[in-house]
Length: 387
Ligand SMILES: *Cc1c(COP(=O)(O)O)cnc(C)c1O
Picture 1 (cartoon, helix red, strand yellow):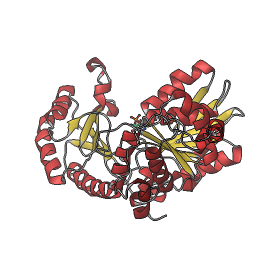
Picture 2 (cartoon, helix red, strand yellow):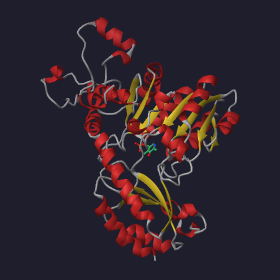
Picture 3 (cartoon, rainbow, N blue to C red):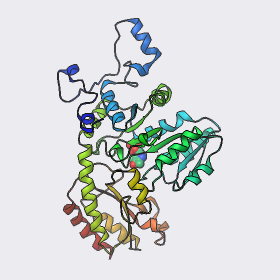
Picture 4 (cartoon, rainbow, N blue to C red):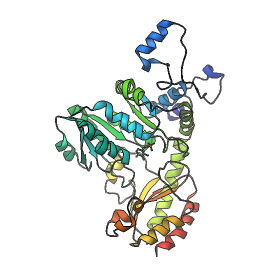
């Protein structure tokens, strides 16, 4: 389907709402019926239409259609956060005694789901690097129900061969899930490669303005209906109409924002790589990235996030570097208009800092919509604090 059509027209029946260009925010909790029979039909299958906005809602449905089409998927569900999408992708498909294989280094709350929550129900997870297929095949047991991937992840950008792993999942009847937040369907289409469920934190690039928290799951309608019928309605963490409306607005500019960020990211990376203060830079489309070939094979682009390892061994200097940046804000998340940094050492006590551990000298950058000159000026000043 044509990208411009998806982003500007699909799902929007303007005759239904006064020919308004912008869809209405259908801010209602419930929907009325004319006949008992219509109500009966809806009670029997809430996935078939409108009953109550914890289930389906017309503004959210416009967004669902666009997101599903972007992924070449049959259907999509939208959640109140990416974490809720992760929870809802995994929990419906496991029961006590089951086993999950996950790549290591996944998003923090996916890891907490596997390490802290699911073991309470006797569901255990084996972590693999994800770099070689044999490792995954050897970890499969007769109890394995899910292979959970994140490609690339958002710190060291490790990637997995999605097509090869999807094929294994199909052969062994194991559900495959990938967190595609880094790429979005603009740069990577996991469903087309055979993955069962593709998820994204829509808080990041889809929203794009740092003003909404949301998550997406897309895949076969039968899988999403199973999720909807119990976990989605039970946990009540579907997205609200206003937030869905903000995401529709975000989608309009998604490809041009990514293109701008891609260009600026390349320029900022070139600037940083020319600086002696930078020991190493990690970015999936960098010529030195150890999985570059696979990245180029399954991703059509990369931008925004990269990580540097600073040469500086002094904790205080690294902290001063981060604190003296003014255009780059020190904050979690990414995907918005504003450029960001996170020093890895914010995750450890100062007393634990060990300069011999390269990850302690890592700083993750996110490039937003500012110009590269503006960003490089900020970096230039701050780099002095590392000497
Ligand atoms: C932010 C993020 C999530 C979680 O999404 P929220 O919207 O913050 O709940 C999941 N995966 C990745 C890769 C993320 O960056």
